[in-house]
Length: 196
Image 1: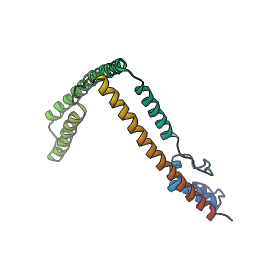
Image 2: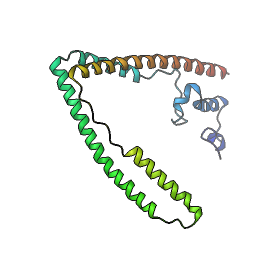
Image 3: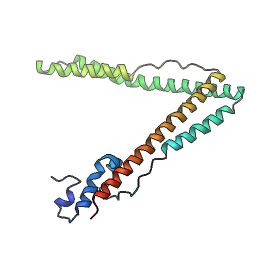
Image 4: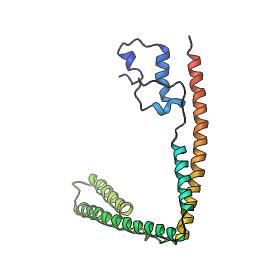
């Protein structure tokens, strides 16, 4: 059975060594990001870094500017808004989880009543019990009550978050640029090795 990389050969298509190499190169190093694209998608001459981290830096800078403009009243309003939103989310979470818990517990009651048809089936019963108990434990907890921060605390938290995001995404973007430069070198070396 041919792979996606060998299908053209299997089908009798006349592909060159260079075409075969470049198709297979998608599974490695510089082109790994293309592994899920069509094998016939063209390989770019030059790879570019994603702008994701740059956009996140800009978002964080805008947030920092916005929060720094808050006066005391605005900070209190924002702290109230976020606290009320957290309370609502917690209430919805508890409601949703109580329905899930009921379904788990109903099924657990049925499993506990079930008499396995043989001793060989006892492990199945124990497995089902454990799966349901684990799911109850991990899926049906009650989240802690959110704490209402003062306006000043909330403002500082948002400033710290924005600064942290700027630092994180700046570091990640620098690493991405470095990685793309290495990948472009890898790709160029590969192309050079395939010159006639």
